[in-house]
Length: 69
Image (tube, rainbow, N blue to C red; front, side, top):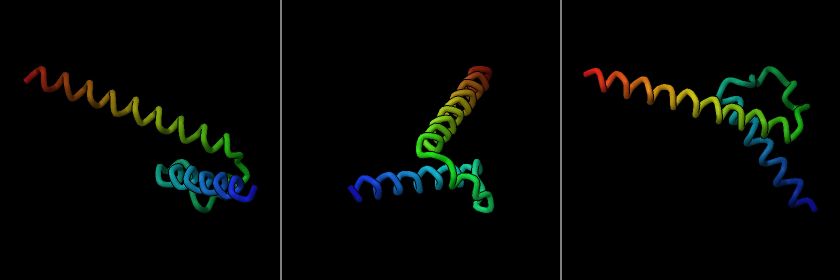
């Protein structure tokens, strides 16, 4: 059973790291330590979706600019 607990804790640390690197969480804000695994996972998915939307918008804008040239 400790293997499962260790795996979950490792994944929690990965989620926290991703959110910190993206600027969603700050190291000084310890509130995130109270977040559940599911809450952290949901925030990471939301971040991923937002990043994809921004990338797609950029691609469309760049394509339109290329078409004008």
